[in-house]
Image 1: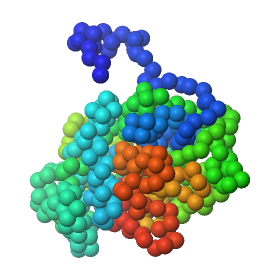
Image 2: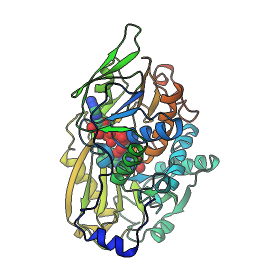
Image 3: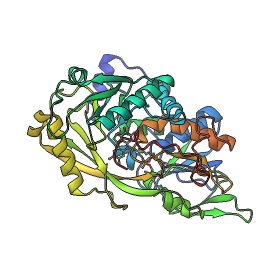
Image 4: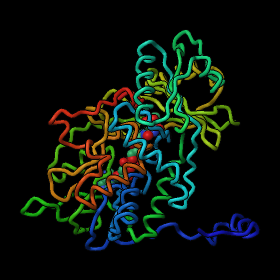
Length: 416
Ligand code: FAD
Ligand code: PYC
């Protein structure tokens, strides 16, 4: 790690960025790599990093059609938690939270992981039963989660209105180790760390085809910058996974929906934790800049439009004003959307595919940011060993044929 004296830090800060080095190279694609990852979101970059770090595979290219981190990685509301119901999911998301806890040190980049707690509100008896079940299941799996009464919710997060007529708060499930991280920093940190280990990150390079040989195995990718030969392709293309997998002739059990978020004008620290309300489809946290970061539900219809419908945000803001009345005076600054890829059981697919040499990491729906390091870690294992890590072994493509579903609809948080 580079260390600077206070004076040197000041000189650099005021020096017009003149001595700042680019954080990663901007290489041209080579004719051949040992592995190619499609998509330079957090998941693809993390997979490349762990391929190099843990498996010694450094002849790797990450191909990105736009700019790195410009997909859902740079568009999400940054919530990190591991309070999922089933054993398989608890293992996967908890693996990720453990990596979050040491990530800034590991990649030597401050990802601003802030374990300020994630509080999931219950508004009706069904919510109470469902969240208590999650609390019990999580604790059996060694994942922290606790039940708070309505008064304890108010004590933990004073701005909450616990006696709203429309959305009364009956209690909440609190995961204290949950929180937020800075999403851009996650992409940049993984990019810099992967690049430093020899990975080529190639932006403005769209994959337009996947070439397969006579035996059906992958031979390489057609791109907007020419053909690149490789025997291993990892697809981490989030909302566009179906499109990319179709290039290899694989039909995916996915639907793609717009999901939107918005931020308010910045204000002084006013909101101490992350609050999620699955019933209302609203979640709130305060960024380090002071903005209230607010997320809504998915659109009702599939689309690649990358902007959500207005009535969805209107509903979310109505509900948030009811939950936190003091926010009525806040002005909203901007909103945006991302395209999320949703599986029938609301759990991801991190797996080999029927095509030799083709691996896929997708189906994170509205909730893959929290999984970025863990998913990248086990996806790298799957690609390197041509076999899943025990943690992602249940998250196959075949489960939708065989019926071994991991139904996390209730933990997935946002309507989808
Ligand atoms: P991305 O970051 O989307 O990366 C995929 C990349 O693939 C893109 O950069 C894209 O350009 C590239 N690509 C696609 N096709 C091609 C091609 N043909 N050639 C080359 N490149 C290609 N999750 C949480 O855990 N917590 C949250 O609070 C949360 N909030 C969310 C809020 C919103 C509004 C949205 C949209 C999502 C949210 N999510 C959240 C979900 C989370 O953002 C995603 O699951 C996660 O970021 C996916 O990461 P990724 O790296 O797989 O995808
Ligand atoms: O998965 O925690 C989550 C989440 C919150 C908002 C969108 N996704």
